[in-house]
Length: 581
Image (cartoon, rainbow, N blue to C red; front, side):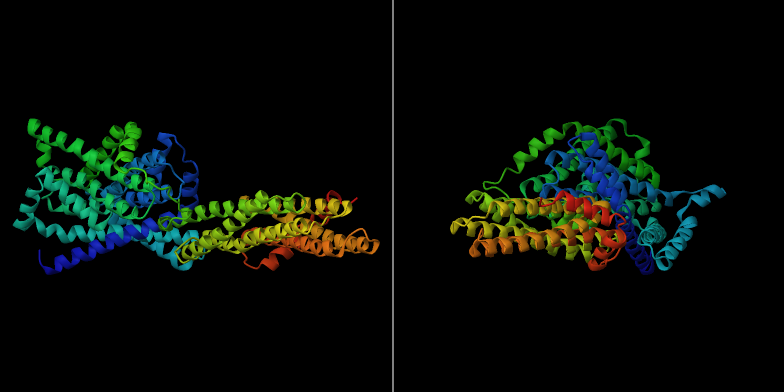
């Protein structure tokens, strides 16, 4: 092996790692909705959590990425520690899929069928399809499919290049001596752990081991301990990701490390004992691609079968190793680690936005109630909700800008834009709720009263605005276009009601049944309620935008009138429902 072979090997390794990363990211974007669905099904059910971890890792081709994701979920309060343990165990089995994909490179034979199964035969076709999809098609999903194919072709080409370059190592005595050293199980475990810790991917380090197996110097006696060590080395990524997180998130990372260390501590003595007693000849045979895949899968499945039933014991043990904090911890609503999985980060944004919407709705209802039923407790609750919406607007705006800068699918980008547009409207609903509170405080502090007629009219308007809040917020949550279209006729009714109430107030002033001072408060109340309706109309417009793939809110509101064939009938129904008579 000369310097040129070494350079070729380095180039092959770089292509291999790049292809794996490219394919994993594209798979993640392409399967975004599926990943969200899997996340939504997570419960305390042990087997369901295990299968979820297996499926997600099989999709994104990295147990490290899945574990980092889990740490982020636990830190955000999305998963309990018990659920996280099951997912982590599933991830350890899911990561074996990559080794089986790479084992295709080891197919050998003279028949046409076997030749066609070799990656060098079909990856050029996949690369051609991939480049056509990526360069010439506009659909983002097809572009991602193209990147998956290109990533796979690059991965297999890098593997083939790396394998061809290292073949010369079989004649290098130092290389032979190195793998003789690795037949010492402890050294093998250390070598596997260090290599995997450096490249932070057990899938990639297994691929490198498979590539080295073409030299004929990698025996099963050396490969098996290295595979055990690789599972320990892959924990470095999650441990680094847990820095600065809550205690439960740290525990999730420690569980990952404990799981792999315990698996090695159980299996390594069994391996050494079996080798000492039986000394099977197969251990001294040269390992191949498929053999390494079998060993990798068998080890991970055995450890999982052994430790999965003991998940609750692992949870108790890790709680002792990482004790509770002396002071209460603040759970991060939006964890930066989730940005590594944009589709799930976006799903988290939707959940937090809905929490913001609920706070805004609670603020409005409290504000409306405080006008006629003033109490300090009610006012404090409204102010707390309004502060919450301010906080949510700040963190969501910053987070969504970061998310939008990543490579995300077209549909995810549109949804991120919809949420960004709606944030200000949710926050403004809470602000106007505070205006209602201030009006109620003025009535209370100045001992002002509204006439019975004014109270009746205010109750009707309150009901209409409360209904538009409920309707528009539900349309946003469910992406319900039908409900979104109902918002605009109701908003028109609210505008009409406001004008009627303003005219009625002037008549009461003229008749002397209402004071000028309370009239100023009345005007503030009408303005605040009408503006809440306007912001609800904007929120519904965001839903219409999303459905029409258009960012023009004014056009969306216009289409809510033009495209809604039932606009006139719905307006009449709402007008009858909120009649002042």
